[in-house]
Image (cartoon, rainbow, N blue to C red):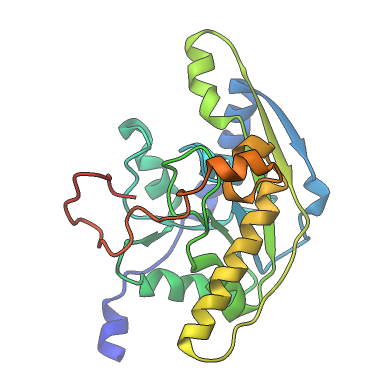
Length: 256
């Protein structure tokens, strides 16, 4: 066990650099779009906290960075095919805990628990990828971390970010809205392994419902309050990469 721990990479983010990047993110978002922010008063004064939101654009982490009163840590996919190649260095520059699909991501979860147990703030996009424009069910990571650490969850709705660059190409500014909900949780899990996984799924549904309340009904998918939207979203509950490990060839889907 000690030998394995010694092989773990050190997670040492550059905090002064993060401050600079956070300032630049706020400046860039204000300059590139017509931005409205609602609910900033819902941010607690300190952590521990798990900040969650919908994931429809590669700009979503930038939105989190600009919104948070403090530089936060992220858990995110090790592979990011939906982000343009020119910006893929930015997450590495910020520093984050990479999740490798199909591996359990033990190291990322262990470091995330350390951050939360020390009163830190963690950003997670629970859906596990940005391949769609409607909400999908959460992967178990955020639910597991709130259950293990007692950290409450702060839901955030991000609307309009996928329209930013198409609008800029037409020399226009997209209308973008960030809505910050009220913190909720934490949750606890108990019982057999099967029972705990069922509870994690239930917590995940609760997380997505809270996010759905903060975005337009047509983007809420299975969690929308519009029955027609829920009906149209049937089938989106299936995770496309279930059972596939990171790096495995798959002709139907790219890496998450």
